[in-house]
Image 1 (spheres, rainbow, N blue to C red):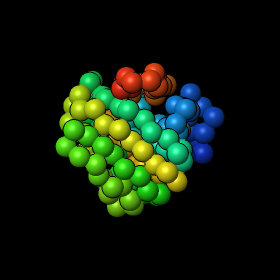
Image 2: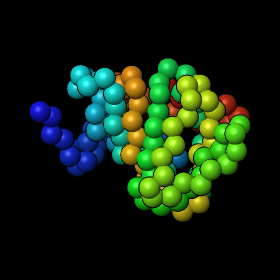
Image 3: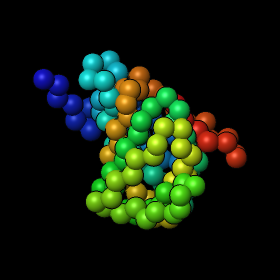
Image 4: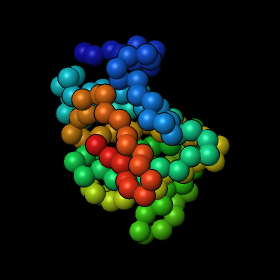
Length: 125
């Protein structure tokens, strides 16, 4: 059995500041589970264009509010809302006041990946 706390991850290589927020990777590839679990904070006033070509992603909002925009429309995010983009689907994540998400990635991340937030280009791993 694996036991790990949020505080175990703080300050480690799995505590990633991606400019528009932080991603605390609680489970990573080295843990042998086949998926990653993160506690992700989206900073207030940020907008991030994302696209994951090699991973499936699902994010569950547990705190704050925001929105995710895809080619299909604009969707409100609030506690109790999950979003899961299709593989390779561009999505724009925005939060005016900050938002906390619990996210799952499959296959698992190494744990130290970071976003490249170049203007006009989606970031992903």
